[in-house]
Image 1 (cartoon, rainbow, N blue to C red):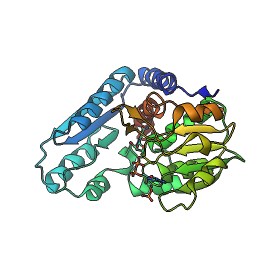
Image 2 (image 1 turned 180 degrees about the vertical axis):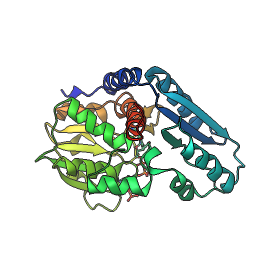
Image 3 (image 1 turned 120 degrees about the vertical axis):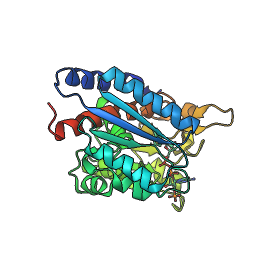
Image 4 (image 1 turned 90 degrees about the vertical axis):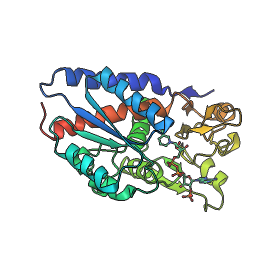
Length: 280
Ligand code: NAP
């Protein structure tokens, strides 16, 4: 039976490390979350960030903007945040209402305050292996692996999903740690065969039940990044957990696996951004 890679415990440890570091700082790091419209999921997400910042001693500012805001007004808000001394990290919650140009908005955020690592400059640095601000979910997966002494070096790593926020940066981070990486997607001819070769299997497709037990290699580490609504309405990942746990050596639960670690990594990124901007 697999060892369960609990994300909650690791997240608490990361946040405590951030809190202790922030406690010793004269100029506190600051995070601004920008929310356009009244999407209930985004509102819940925003209040989670507020709580995390409170726990870590990070200054927090939420900017709730009306759904009908113009592109120019949004750009103006982001430009003000870019210049604010008290703000080190800017998180623009997505998706934006359809009339707004998401890419243009994200490009407005200064790369050194881009704690979500969505700006092309930060993505480029990541590919070059020189990134300081790393995307929270893939960086959190690397932390989970490290916490369990799972070294990607020399291992076959399979990432299911190639999105810009999860799959692609995940593959880059595994490659930087000397994993031999395969990226799978909807056009991959034999997903099961690719997965069965994986010593480290990262599921990030967003399809409940996609990874069945027989697709997991004996002794593999299985990281389920996905957050899907299962047929019973409950949150679930891509992996058939009970069947996969029979074969894997390590496995993340959903919920309670990568999700809490992602949140904690945002706190760490905000601290990193503040230190890089010279706050002490
Ligand atoms: P996304 O943009 O929809 O990308 C999904 C990727 O999976 C695509 O590359 C897609 O391939 C691939 N895919 C979908 N169905 C597949 C199939 N049947 N076989 C093989 N590949 C398939 O999703 P995302 O934003 O990366 O998010 C992925 C999942 O992670 C979602 O469940 C999301 O909720 C979750 N998530 C979790 C966290 C966290 O904190 N744990 C953070 C972010 C996202 P194509 O490119 O060919 O379409």
